[in-house]
Length: 361
Image (cartoon, rainbow, N blue to C red; front, side, top):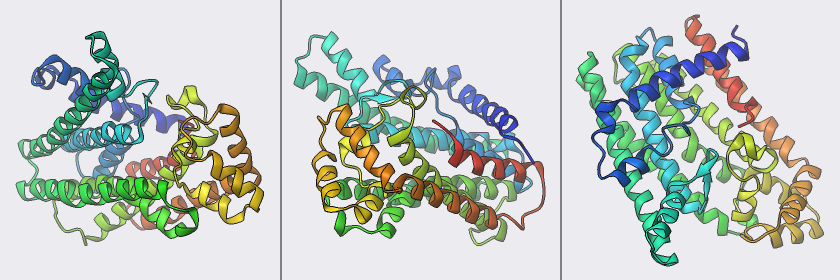
């Protein structure tokens, strides 16, 4: 077994490999003009992510008997793919903070003001740069996958992974994003736990499932999604991805702003229909429902009002309910890989699963 300290070192090691790959001069020199370079790399320098998706792709490749080094371009592609979704998601959610700094659209809104744009044109400039940066990053992710062929991966596998990412994953992820937007304006009683969990899997679980499948397919040199090992690993990573989003929703209401790098309570102000909120409304009395309804979705809600909603969510056991459900997803995920061959990579996958629901940021 691998303890959490050891796992975090292994995770950081993969993160270093991926970000060294992405920030090499041969890539940075391609992006021009300067504003495109700066917007594309805003989340890739000092504000890099934890590399959970690329790491699990590399672990999955190893668990399937493959070479991590060969799979590195796919891991980098997965991180860049995830990054463009964040850039666009921040625009949709109107978030101003990401990883302890300004979001892309907010950073360039401010730069627009420095260029003496009026407030409306500065905001449009920031949004335009974020859309374009995300577009560049999505194209870059495809280019990165194509580099697998240069490392000896069967071109048929490379093309299959590109099709999977650019068709299956894109359509699934964007449909989840659409549902998220629609649900935030829908009456709570029109939703269900299954609808919300389905939306979470589409938004988050699908890319994790792809990461697992891609790693296993590269390791086995196969395009067969029905292969027992590929199926086991991809289902494992997909379930853990949903658990990750449930934990993310928990941290969004009771996390530490400094650790998260974004404002806790923003989901409440945006009126997000998280499982926590749905569970609370399903168990609240009329007075609690009225109070939550007044505050949820109020962009100008005070810190005290947000805190009041959090207290209600806690009193009704909704946070603990969601935490228990996240744990159950991880337990089910572990069953999916119970029969794969024992190896250090399998141990890393199991440690990764635990990290997904016990992280604090």
